[in-house]
Length: 71
Length: 393
Figure 1 (tube, rainbow over the protein chains, first blue to last red):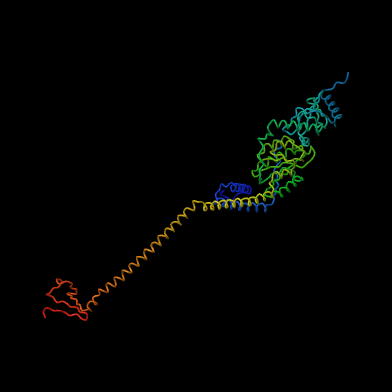
Figure 2 (figure 1 turned 90 degrees about the vertical axis):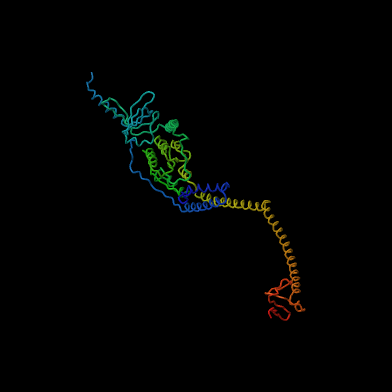
């Protein structure tokens, strides 16, 4: 949770869901809630831009050798 | 008596006769004792209820067979008869092979399915979960196939975050089953692929057959990376489908299963923003209400009541004090005035004015007769003047 910047897209989405649940559960106090909310908004902006700017990458994997035919 | 000839001569004649007469034959029969030798050659027996005959199929030729022959499978073998003189044996040199009917393939399919099922290759417990957000998908299919293009298009539309790693693979005809298996193994040697889609577009039973081969099923089963099979159309079921962690009805469907929808993710994020804002507002409102309730509560009124009481008391005391002080001041003022008058009436000058005198000795007023020292001089103070009385004069 401390290394927010390094979260992958997938982890960011998971964290968003987590935050959403935490905010709804009323477990967190007000200060914590505001903190969570700010984190969530940051993450959602990040996810949004990542997804918007993503370009599909297609690469071709060459088979180096026709490996051991008899095996 | 006929001519005497040697064994070699006879065998030579037999060889010539047989090989000439049966240089182009098609034989139907059931395979038994099938052996694929490490050299790549195949050895088996073709038989029916009344007879059997040995067969060979050389490496270069058997690679064109699209299915794996199995014992019990009824086939039509094309080739020629050859005689091997050192053993005095004859055999069919098989050049081509096909199943005696679709039923044969079906049977081979069912047999293999049963065998692999019993072996546990299709166990649900072994199936790996498909990642919800794959980073890199390995695709095992033909590089020039429509299936690949479909998959790329779908990935681009739904989830361009993913990377596709295509392993160009022959998916039909000779050697395709082995190639498919190798491609799956190749992807498994990499550590960056988190999902494999193996498949191809629609085609005939023969076209799809490589996905019914044991070697493919084993490669899928052995894959550490989850595999989605995506072969042909919805109606086509292959052995690969049973061995795969998930079966997709078509390659396009496989990519749709494999990737989350971008628009859904956007709305997930939007939902988050809306719902979390609401949650937070709700939270704030709740606290606000709580505070309001506290303030309105009886408990909170007690201190303010106490304060009011004290103020009242203070006010009372103050005004009381005020009155007292004024009274006192008044009294003192009166007393002062009286005293002043008194003092004035006592004023010595007034008395002297009326004719009285004062006797002072050493600057002290002599009030009684025994207060005077007759031996010393003294002053007599009149209203208008003071005279010294000197005894010595």
